[in-house]
Length: 244
Ligand SMILES: [Fe+2]
Image (cartoon, rainbow, N blue to C red; front, side, top):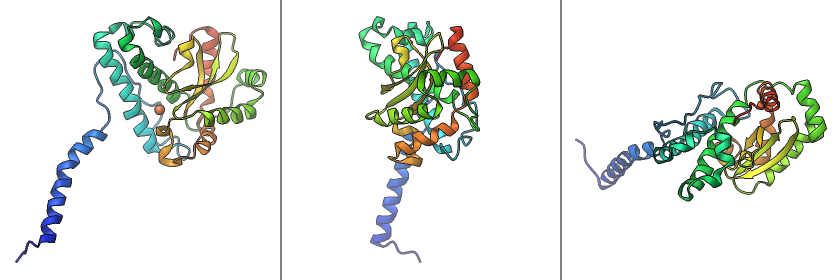
């Protein structure tokens, strides 16, 4: 015989309430839907676990499939009424935000900046990152004091970003490099510059493994920089063909 005690009833009721809530919670946490439109997010060029142990696989699922995907979905929503934001190259739109209508300037700044930054970010990482090519190494020596100093200065700059933002190495058409940071999803492309490489210092990029230890993340991140891909971007910058 099964007796329903008050305690059982409460437990059952609580369980039902939790079950009723579960689908809503799952929906809220599900990947952002792939909104139809002109903006697309490329799949990662490596498996989500490829950057272990430096960047954990869960982060490499959530970060592209929810955070980056949300920027893309937002852009496609904006593009329904403002298709012009998809009709020019991304760096050109970002360099001319002032020409956009007031109502969409800040959303485009945040979401197109986020789309551009993350598109670059996935590209320039990979397992077994290698080392800079000879011409890249020469440029790093000339403009940034050598690889070791670049890594030290880059990490220090990333640590100084208050709140959320990015740390970048920019490159001009002559191959000159510079270290820069930006808040939020801003990018040097907003100033007409090009990005050679950059690291995301939003907490969503590292919190699961590193919690508040951004300095540890910044140091470990150098292990997953794909110098072969960075070298291709360097060559493209000097040829005037580097996009995001
Ligand atoms: Fe991010």
